[in-house]
Image (cartoon, rainbow, N blue to C red):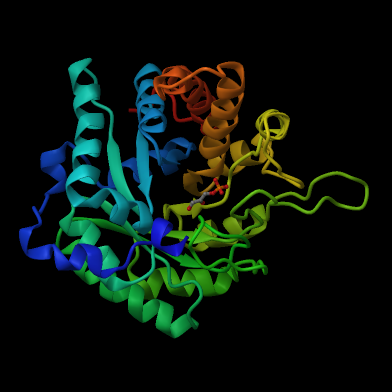
Length: 344
Ligand code: 13P
């Protein structure tokens, strides 16, 4: 399965000579600098939405147009490899073209999610990404700083913004990636030092969110624990204006979990991040909130349901055409929670 989710790294390098290089401005994209400055000063967060299907991408652009919300398209290194440079860049361009066609000016960034190596970040910049993440969170502190600085130097020379990560989030980003069972809250003092020394433009930290289906362990009285807003406050008191990023913020709606289970799937325990907590963080120093799992389970649950209802189906459009508006609905809700409507 590794080959399916993670074809060899050499796949793109082998084709490098024939590869078209893209400049993100020509694709109609922007980096995250102004997006985050506005989000910080006005107290909302920009939705950073992962997509793995065309229905998801179309649904999110439909939502962004209706709400006039800025958006960050999240692409993992695995998806970048699967689609290739050309397809990834062109899909982002189609998104910005659709927005232009309706006469709107909505900032759209194309962001590499969890770049694990310097080379993956370089590849993304050459492929038209306007923002990259270098995830050195599993490295010792000094090595994380050194790797981040190297990526910052390269990316800034191309006017591309860089997100780094400090602290460890439990769970896996996607199949075929290395996960961890342990969560480690970001040490706020180290975060301040990291921001000052690494030169990163934004920092993903761990305040209790987590990748995957089970994010929170309920308290003894059955209530859910609150995110550690105190860590955010410590950092923003010392680095006012500096944008913080939260990963692992899906809500994992029981509606989709039940739908998957009712239609042949098997998911046991789930616990997502409550909407109110995402809303509260959006009003603080958090300027970017990542959502992947919610989009996946919405698409998959409805695909299972529709295929069960349409036993004679032979054409994928039986479900794809119905899924786009459901995706749109999901993303409209995310925009409302993060407060990013009418902020374009
Ligand atoms: P979720 O698994 O909560 O959607 O988080 C996704 C994410 O943070 C990707 O980087």
